[in-house]
Length: 175
Image (cartoon, rainbow, N blue to C red; front, side):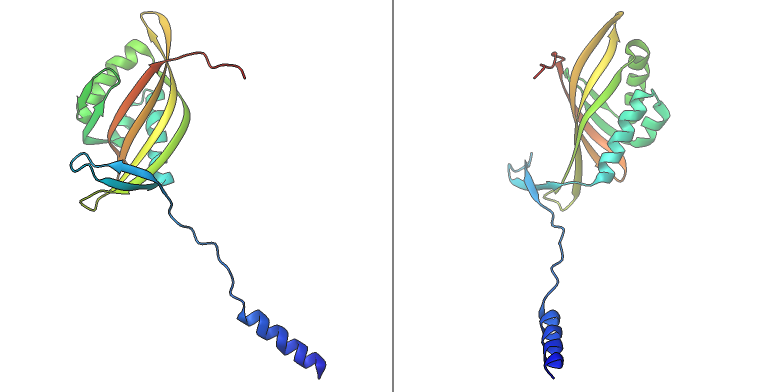
């Protein structure tokens, strides 16, 4: 009888315990400030799919693959360059790159990719990827190295717009 009571007690204890499941939560990682209203909009970690689009985009640039770049561009892509350049549209972008690739042979070495997202004031999901790269290119026969940070808006698996920030490469210190 004792064994039955102990067995029933154990079954009751086990059945009363709730299994704790790890619930994945989206964490707020900061905020974006609206250009229109100045309102702070919560910013969350983004998706790997957006990062993959930007990785493929950088790879296509490294390979000089203008067709792949064009396929990843929105027709109305907007690009702000590091020295005040502004490129409006995929055709203008491809024309710029064809000349730049030929004269400079740029190669990007990725250092990091960070994906984030927000829902804007109109209710549209915006997925951004920020990435850092060492860029090596040839300018007038000389090798030039710069460090770039890119902020890219990814929509529907394509690049809608991006900003490029740049500084001259400085030798990394040996720690």
